[in-house]
Structures are given as C-alpha cells and as structure tokens.
Image (cartoon, rainbow, N blue to C red; front, side, top):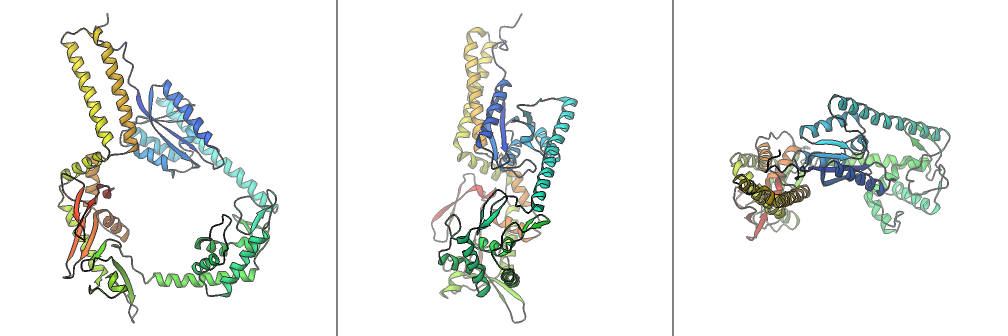
Amino acid sequence: MQPENDFSSVVKPKPIRGVIYARYSCDKQREESIEGQIRECRQFAKGQNIDIVNEYIDRAYSATNDQRPDFQRMISDSYSGKFDAVIVWKSDRFSRNRKQAISYRDILRENKVKLLSATEPNIEGPAGILFESMNDGYNEYYVAEMKIKMKRGEKENILEGKTNGGCLPYGYKRIEKYKVGINRREAKNVKRIFELFTETELTVHALAEKVKAMGIMNRKGNPFKDSSIYHMLKNRKYIGEYHWGDVMNNAVPAIIDKKVFDKAQEKMKKNERKRQSFQATQAEFLLSGKVFCGDCHSLVIGESGTSHTGKVYSYYKCGTAKRRHQCHMKPIRKDDLESYVLSRGVEFLGQLDLDRLAKAIHEYELSICPQIKELEKSVEDVNRRLSNLMSAIKAGLNPTDLKERYNGLVEQRDELEHNLSEEKCKNPVLEVDEIKWLLSRYRNIILKNDVQKKQFIDTIINTIVIRPDKKVDVFYNLRQSPTPPMKMATLEGSTDYLHWATIS
C-alpha cells in the first residue's frame, strides 16, 4: 500500500534545463533553416521533459572550425551550470571537425552537460561511444569530399578559360555565369586612379582624399576608403591575370597597361620601406590615454625623437605644452614612468584582501542585475514554504488535503527557476570564487612583454596624474570597499564612478 505522504503519483518529475544550438554555414541559406532546426529541437525537448532556457544561433558560420561566436558563448556558459543539456538538430550542427567535436563534447561532459540530437539516436554506454566516433568521422568525411569536388570543378573552369564567380572588382561586370566584361564608366575611373598614383607624389591616403574630392564613388555611392584604393592598386586582374590558387588564365580583360601597373607596384614598395623605417623609431606607449598633467589637467601624450647619433628617446609630455607651450610641465622619460606605474600596480594587488573584494564585486554585479536577486529570493521563499508543508505532513496533517497546494508550489518553483536560468544566461554574474580567481591571476602575473603589460595596465590602472613637484598619483580601478561602486575625486574636484566591470 502506498504511504499517505507519498506524492510520487501526482508530482511530475522536475524538468532538466536545456539550451538549443542552431547553425547554418552559407550566406545563401535562409533564416527558415534556423527556424526549422529550433522547431524540431523544441519538439524533441518537450517529449524529453527538457525546459529550454536559452538559444545559441550562429548564422553563416562553418562547422569545420570553432570560431563561432554563439558556439563559444555556449561552451563558456556550460562552466557556470546554467543548463544541463545542449540540443542540436543534427550532430553536424555541433561540429564537422572530428578532433574538435571530441574535445568540446568532453568539455560538456566534464561540466555535466549532455549533448543531444533531435533527429539522431542518443545512445549511451559503449555503443554510444562507437556511434559518436562513426558520426564524427562521417561529418568530417562529408566536408573533405565536398572540398575535393569543388576544387576539381573550379580548376577545370580555369583551364577552360572561365572564372569561378565571386565579387568582381570595381571596373568589371558579369556578362554570363563564367564570363566577365568591362564596365566602361568604372574602368575610366580605375585608369584615372592609377594615373594619379603613378604620375604624382600622392600617397594612398592622399590619393583616396583626392578621389573623394573629384566625386569618384564606389558602387554603393560611398567614397573609396584607403584600403579599397590600396587593394585596387595591387589587384592583378586589372592587367588581365585571373589567378585561382596556383592556376592562372586570361578570363578577365585588362584595363591597365602592365608597365603602368608595375610602376605602381614599385612606388608602393618604396612607400612601404619609408613607413617601416618611420615605425621603427616609434615606441609603444603603454599608458596612452591614462596620464594627465597635474598642472593644467590636459592629457599627457607620448613623443619619440631621434638624436644625431641615431638613438631613439621617448617621453610622456603634456599635450598643452607640446601644442601651445602654455604649460611648464617638464617631460618624463617613458621607461621611468611605465616602470613606476607597473611596480605600484603589482604592489597594490599584493595588499588586497581578495575575499572581501571578491564579495563586494559580486554584490555590485547583483545590484546592477536586480531581477536575479529577486528571483533567487523568490525561489528560496517557495522552497521554504515547501519545507514547511512537508513538516506539517510529518506532524500529522492529512496529505490529501495539501496535495493541490503542494503541486501548486512545485509548479511555481519550476517557473521561477526557469526564469532565473534565462536571466542568468542574459546577464551572467560571476560567482565569488570566480572573481577571486581572476584577481589572484593578476596578483601572481609575471609581465614578460608589452602585450601583457598593456593588458595589466588596462585592467588595473584607471588614471595617472603627474604633479608639478614631479610626484605621481596612481588611481586604480579596484578599491577595497564594502559598498561599490566607488567614488573617486577627478582632476576638477568633482566625483565620478569607477565600475567593477573594469576587471573583466
């Protein structure tokens, strides 16, 4: 006989939290492709008692690599325990790279997240391992075979004197599927651009400005950018060479004479050597945008110069003193200021109470996401009421009379937990331990190169003030306080907020 306080016959099993990952790989595919995947995934989830709390969608991204924004966001979110299952329409939506499929599937397993297919068998145990291996192999094989067939067809087109489609450069138009002709109006502008570049001292940037002033626009009716002019001057299609891999034909008619084109290439090489020579004398100023003059409150900027011996000297100098000579702040050596600021930053981190600071940061993150805090309180309240109800049953109250009330509370709790999971997916909040780990990582950091030093400075340092008495004040993004966000006196004496988001 079933015990009176046994609710198993009336209480539905609690649904697990799931997310959907959908993807298509080609710009030519339509949005309906995604809608169909999501529809079938939701039908599958309903039949498996899975509560969908989020959707991750990558449009026009190939599954042969993992450089997909929403895919990486989904993998990152799996570490936080926001969901228990990932549903895909087919396994090839997840990955078509066998090695990456195994690697990311292992990450999900370590995070206690199942990967489920809405249209394929979801087999567990040894048989499931074999099925996954075969499926991953087939998905990768499909891509490899398709690439071989495409390359073979493309090479045949080139050998037959055809093109392989794609966006045509300015100056050309498509006559037939594989045949290209000259757009005479645009070709006239191309010739004018090459003529200006080869017959004058104009740089690529100056040429772009000149072309804009002449009213020459691109196909969209916008001015040519520097990069567009640069690629135009480098494009060998304009001399009739159509390259496809290591194969070439003359399927594209020439617009520019080869002698003019070669002259343009020689000038570009000469300009590139000058640019590299100039860049060699320029130092990387790690504190750019963060240093202010304590005398006139202007931004302090980096400046490099070369002595008669060829030695490069670099300083931080007040912008007002440099431009208008109205400030008497003396320059400070780049290496001296950067070394001082870095050593002070490392020293500052070493003195922090990480436990206290991590809790303060977590509380601040919750304060800017009040819905999460309210939902968590509501879930706690419902769980407390369920606990009280069970205590009343144990004390002798009739469970039959309380059954409806119990089921109502369970449904309310499930809905609140669903909303909480959705809210956490939309507004991720770092846990205290995660924040402590981030802070400790910066505390133990060894700054080996300028890239690491720049990351450290951008994260830790807010403002640096060089005072007239040569003293330096360093203001940090992280302050020990139980009530963030912090207030800090600015140069003008007013107040501004420093947000905790600067540590991410």
